[in-house]
Image 1 (cartoon, one colour):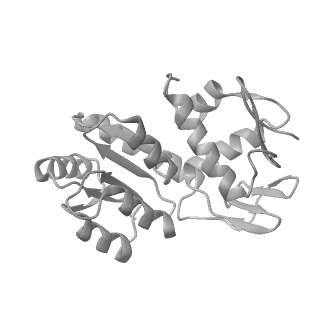
Image 2: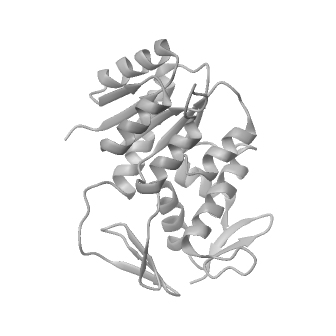
Length: 232
């Protein structure tokens, strides 16, 4: 089955160029030039990844992201013409997986698409198995084979990135994981000054889904100035 990607941008030249590069990689690509067409595609089709422009003439990229995250966990890469930390944090808070600032090189975007799809395939693809080793920590259970997560036997739906963070912390339970190590292991990129905010936003999102109180955490504890830990 071909990998299906949605690309949304009101600048037709950018959308068409990105579409050509992705099709050359063997992906099945759906193009949309406004938010309304994109929303119809999101509601009626299945995708493996979406590339969303933030600034659209009708429904902006953040609203489209909300619509995707209401029912889907596939990766979403946001495009923006502004190198704004506010935009980035808002997108990450809503569940975006990556952010690319315009102007960008098409090959850079293709590389980021491939990286997100590798993570999606590893941590939460459509193909799932039924059985496998289960890790249990104080009511939190993770099935490595099916990638299913439950808290007190209630299912928790995580994005592939959130699952990767949780699994890495659980695999290192009982130890404090430095923020730098967590970022390099999950994002597969070099740690920069802005990377700390990226990790914090995703940890907050993950805690919310796990029902974890940041002030008195049951699962993910923050060791200030160092990193995070899940006690074994």
